Length: 524
Image 1 (tube, rainbow, N blue to C red):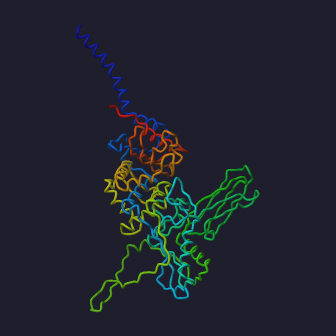
Image 2 (image 1 turned 135 degrees about the horizontal axis):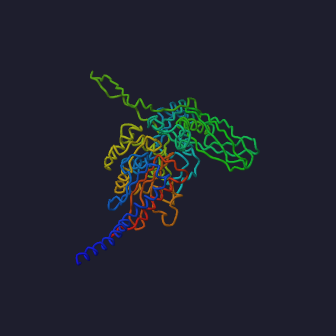
Image 3 (image 1 turned 90 degrees about the vertical axis):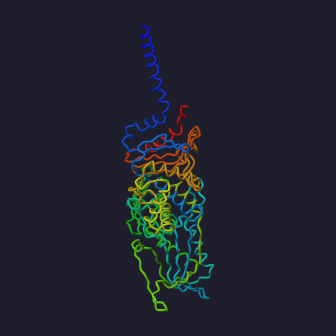
């Protein structure tokens, strides 16, 4: 009888303990359950998700889903480019743009020789205001730098140029686009060609307004230097209330002709678009020549460009001469240095890193990649920069099988990386002397950059510093979040192959970040 009572007591104890244990386990893993609920939505679940979140102080992984699988990262690629640039080039590096000649200026102000405008990769020869503060501002005229350089030439007493006007972007190879870029992107700002002589982000601003009456052609304004493109305007004004507007733009590769067609309602407030310049060096040479002429300088030569052909970088030639003593001398003859007539230095590199990450500026990221190749590698090429980047990533314990990159911006759909690799990069960067400048370059949730309109509620405002990324069917967000209990978490969220519409992918990603930020304290 006593044994039976003990058995019954044990059974009651088990029945009491088991539910509590299950409940306790559920409380111990609130983050896992919250994220699972977000990803359980049928439309969200159809996509491929990769997530990793790590407590930055303890190094403990607090959540992971497919952390070692490879995903297309979109603009999260910029995290790798900018970290490498800060680490190896340094935050204080300045770009140097010059106007040089190997000729001479006589007492009458005649320059006997060519005049070369030499670019070395400065991303901000534009009207952009630096340092970046909350949003991109363009307070100065887009081409004011070229105007200032022209003024310096006048101040040097040049009145006539007997040689050619040359726009020289040979500091980087003539490798304007990355592998895997879509042809559809190349006409627009986000696919602007890469050049060591970058002017106004290598774009022109096109604005379209309705005509005075239905049936009239629309008004099209191009800025700056509208003479560069021939514009075929076929946009017609439609009656008020017949919206939405439908406007299409076409420019064939290699062409300086723009065809713009469609319709715009009479009551439309207008449309604007930033369009890529076909050849930035050619654009610069033509505009600069016009400014010299406007200032009364006579130009007797041609307008031309100087590019470095990609194939020529791996082609070497050796000049052999016979020395006075009869032996062979492999040294090339000494060439006197050019005469610098005008110059301009950029803001420190760290300021452009902030532009790249805050607003996800593709062209500037590509320039940074080529700068790595030129300054720290074998050549100012995509592959030269990527080779330098691969060496740097080994220091962060990021193995080659964890990623593959084909550009510096993330516009290429051939890029692949794992969430774990991104978390390792961010964790490594947070411990480096340049780490704070790197983290400060990320958009802040609800405050600025590409996160200005996300996490705006009082609970989340300012808690997130993270880099966004988006391509069609691809979204990403990686960075740092401070939880409600004050812990810092580094995270990476990558989603591929989704067909979610509108804000659905963003809302799902943001829901995961909120779950991380609201994670309950661990049970003591």
